[in-house]
Amino acid sequence: MVNSSVKSEGKLAVMMIFCFQLLSVTQTDMIKMRVSDGRELVLKFEENKVNH
Image (cartoon, rainbow, N blue to C red; front, side, top):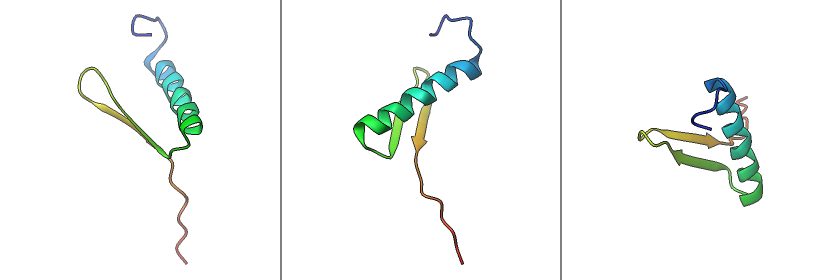
């Protein structure tokens, strides 16, 4: 995927789809992945909070 001609936004979309599927399979609410340059990609499900 690194050398693909797909734009960065497309690559990010594929990674997000992969992460959502991983969340479903592992029955967790957060995934944290470290990128090769040291940055982290964090995807977390949170319930909508409504304050009355």
